[in-house]
Every structure is written in C-alpha cells, then in structure tokens.
Image 1 (cartoon, each protein chain N blue to C red):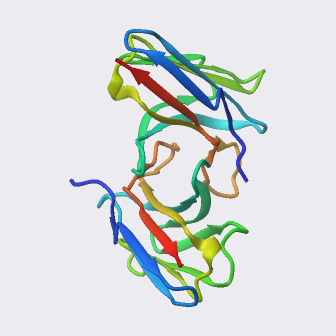
Image 2: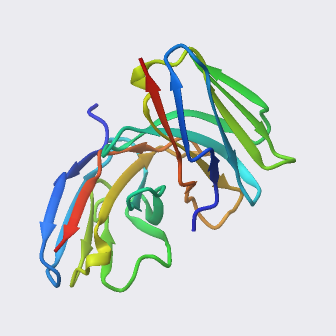
Length: 115
Length: 113
C-alpha cells in the first residue's frame, strides 16, 4: 500500500482557467476528504465522501468548486474560473470508518498557484 | 472554521530538550488527534486520544486530554532535529451530522542541534 496519492503535486494556472486535481485514497478506505490549506494556517475542511456519496460540504466550497468520487475509489476536485484567492495547498485524506471514528491519512497535497 | 488553537505559535528548542505544545478547542469532541507537517508536505498522523481517555503515549510522544477544560497537550521528549515541523491538533466533533476534522493553526517547532 502506497498511501494516499495526489496528482499533480504542483499546478500553476492563469486566473480564469479551470483546474482538476486527483486523489487516490488508500484502497480499502471508505471515506475520502478534501481540505484546503493556506500559508501559516491549518487545513480547512472542504468536503467528504462516504464511498461514492458526497455527504458534507463546507461553506468554503463555492459554486466554482465541484468534487466527485464516481466509483467510490479515486476522487477529483475541480475548480472553475480560478481566482488568485484559490491559491493554496489542496489536501486529500482517507480513512476507514466502520463503527468508530479513526485517524485520517493525508496525501502530499497539490499546491495550486493562480497567477 | 478552525476550532482548535495551538499554543505557542512558534517554539525553538535545542536537541535533547522536551517540547510541549498546547491545544484548546470549543465544542465537545469524539476524539482529538495530533498531526505533524514538514514544510510544504502532507500531514502525518501522530496520535489519537479519545474523549474518555486522559493520557496516551507513543514512543517519545505523550498526549494529555482534559475535556473539562477543553484542552490537550503534546509533549515530545528528548527532541531531535528531525522533529522540526509544524504540529497541528485536530478535533473530531461530537456530532452525527458528519465527519470533519477541525484543525488549529499549528505550532511551528524548531529543534536546533
């Protein structure tokens, strides 16, 4: 098992362009989360999936953001019409939750720079 | 929103010394977790302490939890230069509405040789 994998690791885009990030969770994990982290801050929750169902979205997830987990395995996070304020590290995490909440395992993140 | 707050924001110590970081939070929790993040990298899970536990050890790490004061502490004993990183506490809220770890802003630890 290679852990949570995120691609790309870095992305530079021009303002107004669309970008898509991919996250491959640990294979048997049923929950997948997306977080955003800006410099000097802790990660902020964006959304999470239980298998393929998107169960919770934070208010940070504007209409320009969409996340999918089509087959309950990998997930994509798309940002449309990027803005400079979208520049951040986007972190994906996964966990196996049955009856007890346990730790989440994070990927290395995708660093987005909007110029 | 970020619920946990770590204290201090930055800590500088010498190798061999102990490092103590504190975390305060606001709402009731299922558990509290500590993570480490090296510069520009992802987060590494260190330890989880459940709301009915008061103390937990893992190697050189010792975590305490005081739910009456809504606070936790992380002690790293006999620190090493490799412990240099940012440390975050994350609370798992006691809620049936979902699962969203709430992170604080972190404590930046520098361990000098």
